[in-house]
Length: 222
Image (cartoon, rainbow, N blue to C red; front, side):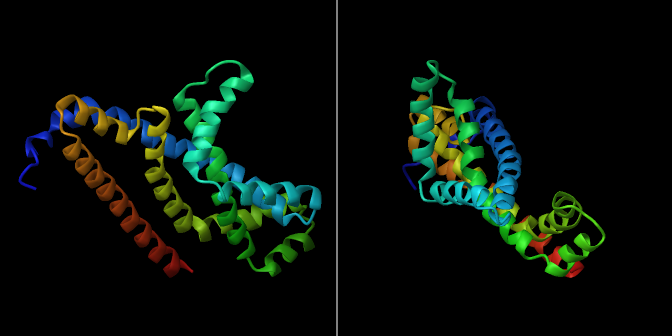
């Protein structure tokens, strides 16, 4: 610790290098969460539909994505898609599309568990009053599933925020990139990585604490 320059931990570093990356990391987390939940819900409904034409491709997609490291998916998409379409799409857009596609597989499993947690009697009651499958899901099942799975969805979102640091591999300017850039300019890479770790820990620990409080409140409501 004696070799560390604590003067590196300054407001100047945060304002000039870190804020820009933090904004992108938060934006990527929000967009990937929304897109991942929507696509994941569709995948979950496909797997629960009972139709093999829907179940098989959805199962293959979910299991395939969950079996591949995220950093490999990021690199594949960033390097291969430009050769297919004939032009680069940029690191930020590539990261956004990749995260939505990848996280949808995880959100799909969360949503599938949430849907299956709803008592079948409620589904049968919706059918008894003449609801279609779509109406039953939209008005009866999904609202309760979202409430039941909200803590798990938020926990996955926190993990997603941590994973945004992987876009550094394709040159996107995220939170980690901001710290690394500052460390290179000031010649203090150790301090940069240490400060990055502290910031990630504080943010993720605080969000995890809030999720636990929310989970406790939901349990009381039940």
